[in-house]
Image 1 (cartoon, rainbow, N blue to C red):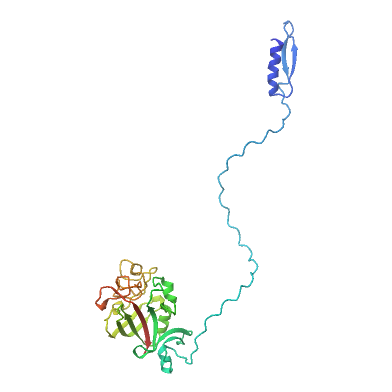
Image 2 (cartoon, rainbow, N blue to C red):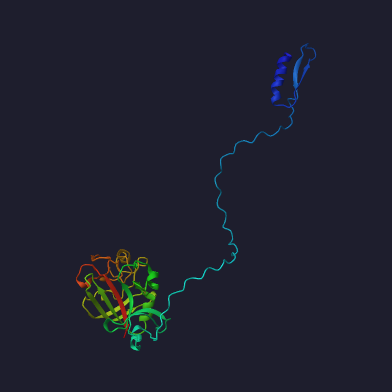
Length: 306
């Protein structure tokens, strides 16, 4: 093989080997020298690292680790500014167990008073001292639509609303009050022509939460609008989030109010407030009035201890 070709071959291998040596050998008896590349069978020294390649794509996120332990409580913050002074409380010369008791002691003005029912903490209530001899404790009032009565079980349990306009005193309070002694019930309604209507019952009681605040009412005794409540006797209270009625649906959800529904009602004084005269099944209804789902302008439910 010509030396030039062999040498070229060796030079090509410089790309792979650090050291290449060319030598000529003449095998004995041939008369022809040949060239070999020395060093092709040895590994050269490690070269310098090449430049860094481009960053590869991000891998998929790993699974979340376990939640750590709760840290120590931080230091107490700075004391806030003093709040506004609250409204003045009601001062009363009288100490009665009911509105009727206050009336008997000489309290003749209607308004919010403190009573001390037997076995209960002092209670702030609205006393009607003028209607039908006075001494009535008002537990429901509707007259302007400023308070929604489409609320859940716990709201009706505790009571809600405003002393200034509409309110529900609370099923727990109604139960605690009426579980002691005998109470009568009066319902006062006003239509959009300012005509007044009423219905009275000589016996009224609300059972406890374990009995779903069931209604015990009887003896329709007087009125100019008929009886639309005794048909609800023994019915449990229902709200949209606790359905205890006898229908296959949910009367409280359909009629948008809590009440002692049957299937569904002959009366519903907690229905939606209508700002104008309206005939609506979801309104403030008393069906024995002979008007088809007439929705009243105002409603008050009140009790008096006998």
